[in-house]
Every structure is written in C-alpha cells, then in structure tokens.
Amino acid sequence: MPFAIVRNDITKMEVDAIVNAANTALKMGGGVCGAIFSAAGARELQAECDRIGRCETGKAVITNGGRLPARYIIHTAGPIWNGGKSGEAQLLHDCYINSLELAQQHKCESIAFPLISSGIYGYPKDQALQIAVAAISEFLFKHEMMVYLVVFDRQSYALSEKLFAALEKFIDDHYVEELETKFSCRRIIQHDEMLEEASAGYTKASEVSKAPRKLDDVVNHLDETFSRMLLRLIDEKGLTDVETYKRANIDRKLFSKIKSNQNYQPAKPTAIAFAIALRLNLDETRDLLGRAGYALSHSSKFDVIIEYFIESGNYDIFEINEALFHYDLNLLGA
Image 1: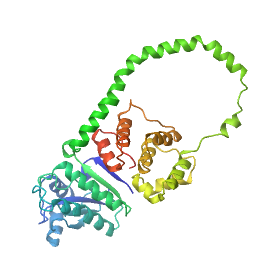
Image 2 (image 1 turned 90 degrees about the horizontal axis):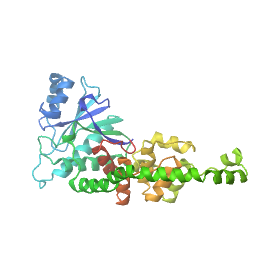
Image 3 (image 1 turned 45 degrees about the vertical axis):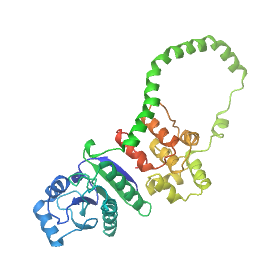
Image 4 (image 1 turned 120 degrees about the vertical axis):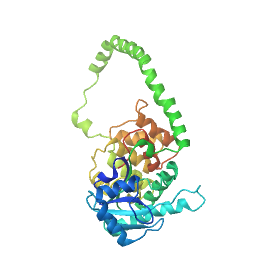
C-alpha cells in the first residue's frame, strides 16, 4: 500500500494506529504528545504507559487507542537535536522503522505518523522530513501498509532550500511566462481563425473528394491502450509488477485492476506515477499519458513540477510528492 503526506490533526486520523512522539519516561507532554493524551483519555493512557515504564530513544512501545478513532497508539521516543553529531539521524530513522514493525506485528493495515522530533526537540524540519520519507519508503518496498505522514500546518513542513529554489525558478521560467503570453496569443489565434474561414471553401471541396471512412475501420485501428503499453514497458525495463507499483506509490489492488482490464482509464496522477516508476523521459511520458487521454501543459503548475523532476532525472516519487504537497497539489500514486 502507498504513502501519503496529509495536512490534518493526527488525533482525527481513522487508521489502525497513530504514532505519538513520546518522551522516554512515557509521560504526558506538550505539543503532539499532549494532544494525543488528551484526545485518547489522559488518565487511562497515562496509567497504561506507567505499566510499560520507559521507551528508550529510537525504540517503540504500543498501547490501546482509548477514545481515539485509531485502535492503537504507538509511542516512540525521538532524539533531541544536538547538531547532528550524536547519531540523531540513525535514532530518528529507527523511530519510524521500529514503529512500523510494531504496527505490522499487531496486524495494522494503516498508520499515521507526526513529523517526529521536529517540534520542541529541535530537529531541523527539512532533515526530519527527509529521514521520515526515507525510512517509510524503505519499509514499504518490502511490506504492505498504508502510511500517512501528518503535518498540522504549513509551519510544520519545509522543502529543502536547494530543491525549493530550483523548483521556484523552473516554475517561474515555464509556468508564469506561459500564463503571461496567453493574452498576447489571442490576437494571433483570432488571425489564424480568419485565415481558416477564408480557406473553408477549399477545405470543404477537398473533403468532398475523399471517400468517407467507415466507423468499423476507425474502431478496429485503435492505438495501444494505456494498460497494454504499461505492461509492455514493465517488461522492456526488466521490472517486476511489484517493483513497478511500489515505485509508483500505487496500491496493489489498483494495479491489479489496471492489469486485468486493458481498457482501464487511470486518473492523471496515477498515469504519471507509473511514468516516474518506469523512469521515462519527457517524450516517453507524454506518449504514455496520451494513451490515457492526458497531456502535459505549461498552463498547469502540477504539470510543470512533473516536467521539472523528469528533466532533472529525479524519479524519487516521494520527493516529487513533497514538492506537490508544498504547492497544495494532488500527490502521485496515493
């Protein structure tokens, strides 16, 4: 199952388990921890945590969800930022992996994480995000689970400065310019329409001389469908079906529908997700999208961002989704 970044209150998430960014003493704290305790029932949850005792940094323990929509709360103690020289990155990575493995042991099919250690523990948000995405994607390449990374507001989320600067420039060069030139193009279009009307008589005369095509001939000469082209490309790239749908951040059940129905019409983000999974270049991506009835346009910020990553040779679907989320656009796959 796929991975999605969402903006929400983690205590409202209807999943099998939510993750609490806990302290090692498993005491009710502030921030996300305090909100989870309050929503679950602080007295009852604290009593259950006291019976467990402690949770060492990087480890994870589990309790009931109390009054939350989630069945379980997984408590993990994130590292306190100390300049990055005290093994914080590995400990933070362990928080995600140990929480996911504990959820799997309890047969959870869905789980929601906060951005661990990025609050009062001071972990730089962009680095915390990169570690979260890397750990979660590492787990999902081997296991099936629906994983959410929940951020409460825009201040809780940050693109890396390098990626943000490069992406902003690309959007400015391609998207903004396209919008500005649309108005000046109208006169050219109107002029072309006049020329078309002037030559209409000639065109109609030419059409009369052509023999009309039969409907059966048109229907029987369709191009390769999206499903058939996708399966052909998977074979040509030497990938397995599992590798492909996991790289595309696509649910296994959805992939099965596409595979079993040669006329399946995917949503545009789904089609693009497969292009990213197959590491197609821009022309190949346009060809695959065309089989589903879509195109890439510079009048769409979503399309421009996809074009940027493909032209940059960056096919990390989770990093692409970070950028799409930053601009409040639909994510790929999930």
